[in-house]
Length: 299
Ligand SMILES: [Fe+2]
Image (cartoon, rainbow, N blue to C red; front, side, top):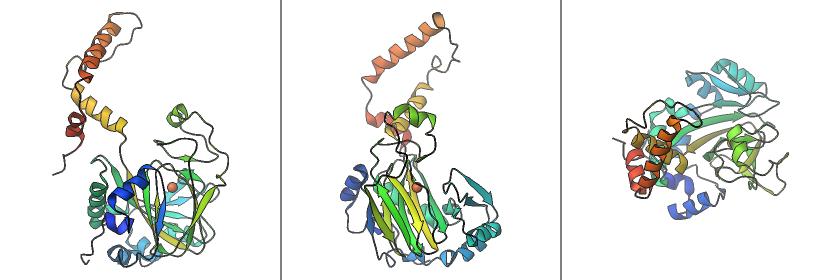
């Protein structure tokens, strides 16, 4: 492999990091085309020559989407050979966590993650979707941020603002039940069909589409199409706070006691004492105390 750098700049084009962060925070998608040269090291991997070469190198199962549901909520994991047959017969297939087999991907993933400013606790992975002409993904949103790079063929994407919930912590597919936690903090009803005020994006080889967290999207391949995703699932402040809090409290023998629940008795008063101590302590907490626990652990 040559040393053409794949970094944040390769994905955000003319935007500066600050401009990109504004787009990310305001959940604004963007597309750029003609990035074949900037992504040469990625696109020219022999691995990506064709779906056949990808399947031939693959030493794991491949996910095949149920064509009626057209989403990862209904998929089976089968051998690469069987997946290739399913693809030829019109099913979408997914090579998950491609970064496990190409170490450079993890190097790029972590570099881009640091450049964006996502926590070390971010789950970063790469996915390759092979979608036969006329097929695509059912309308949904994800809890993660995606850079979608079109490798082969033409694919249409439709994106729409999510007017039901901001910053969802799990994904949701239109027409399917929301998970319990998502349902608990979402006060409006989810739409029953894809929002009409959407924007269409057409991806050709070398196109990069940024799909922010929570934005509704659905797809359809115009021709047989292969795409590569950089997928970032950063922790929320909730995750940072609870992980660091657990680490702090674990130093206390009292907090480590097994919880015994009785509604009126002494066990609850012990818990009240702990909570009172905690709330007195909270006033002195600074973000750095938490971030010292979750960040800067990388060697
Ligand atoms: Fe998605």
